[in-house]
Structure formats: structure tokens, C-alpha cells
Length: 276
Image 1 (cartoon, rainbow, N blue to C red):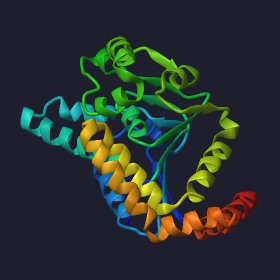
Image 2 (tube, helix red, strand yellow):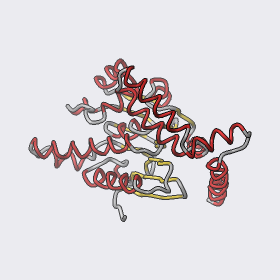
Image 3 (cartoon, helix red, strand yellow):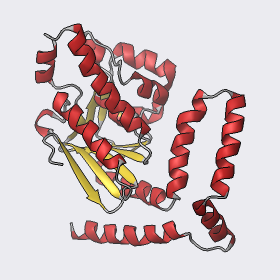
Image 4 (cartoon, rainbow, N blue to C red):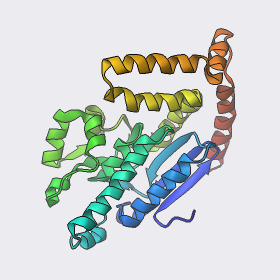
């Protein structure tokens, strides 16, 4: 599809979804929310894609809600605001529930609702130059739609602090409190993301999908429910084609098919990066 506010680049099994409004630091508006929802559905429906990398064009990751959009919604009725909010909530939910592993490549400042994008991803890696802020309270609002994902990341105690103060958070501090997983020098950001991609590609595709399913379901289960579910899912995987191949390869001290394919993919990607 032809998008106006985002870019979707497909490179073999890797999709890069890029917030593409650098002139406003990739702030989101109704159009971007709609296009991101469409892009995620497109990516989800493609069986050849195994990994999603989410990032921002230019020097920022996402500056939160667009000011011009906010000038519009200040005049909206409750019903109109509710509809817009539901669409943003659906976007965060789609990103969180995507069966593919997702990596947030945080290339710069991330303010307000922009934090929902990386918090809904599986792995968040940031440039040391990035700054973060849950600053909604400064304009009389709250981080409502993104709160399930941010609270899950940093815990209720930290959320009490940062939701209420709206203070700036350095990349180093964000890593310390668990808002992101790792911060690296800006020049090393792509290398760090590439290393995570390598780890993901050399893992079983079905095992990753079922791991994401496990991570979504088990925290909501009682111990009794989890006991039944986890025993069933590992039994299913042990007799699955991928599980059989993986265990046999391990016992025979050789690499399974997907790991061999990953080596070829990674080699080709490295050639492209060297040319660039």
C-alpha cells in the first residue's frame, strides 16, 4: 500500500515499519494511527515475514500526539474523542498482540503517547541520546491508552512516579527502570538491533510464535490453569515438525533448517549493509 505517514520496508523475512513524519518529530495524528493499524494488519497477514522492527524517521522516535491534531480534538465531543481513543487503543493492542517478535529501534526522543509504541514491542533498544517523558499530566491529560503496556514494563511503583511527575528520563535511566531493555551509543544502534535479529532468526519460527502466545496467556491464568495449559503446549511442540527437527538436530550436534537458512539471510543482509 501507499502510505503517507509511515514507511513499510520488507527485506526478506524482516519488516521495518517507520514512523515517517520527521518534520513534526514523528508525532502521531488520526491519519498515522489509521495507517499504522493497516500496516500491522498487512504485516501480520504475510507468512514470509518473521520479524518487525519499529523505528522513526529522522532524529526522533515519536513526539507523542501531533499539536495540530490536538487543536482539532479540543473541539470534539465526548463521542468523537472516544472513537479516536479507541482507534489508538486498537493500534497499541495490535502491536502488542502481533504473533511476530517486535523490536523497537528507538533512535531519539520519545514523548507522551510515543512511549506506547516501544512499550508494546517485545524488545526495546535505544540510542543513548534518546530521552523519554510520560508528560501528559503537564497538559492536563494522562497516559491512559498506553498505561497497560508501560505499567507492565516499569511496574506500578515506577509508574506512580513518572505518570505523576512527567519528568524527563534519560536513556540510561530508562534502561535502569525497565522502560527499555538496552541503551547503546547512537553509532552502535543498528549493530545492536542486527544482533537481536540474528538471535531471533536462529530460533524456531513456530517456537517464537508459541512463546508470544505463552507470554500473553500465562500472566492472566491461575496456577491451576497454567499447569494444564503449559503441559499441553509443550507436549504439542515436542511432537510438532519443528520440535522434532530441533530436538533431532540438537542430539546430532547440527543446526536445524531454520538456523541454516538464517545464516544465509544474515550473510545477504550484511552484504547489503556493507554496500550502503
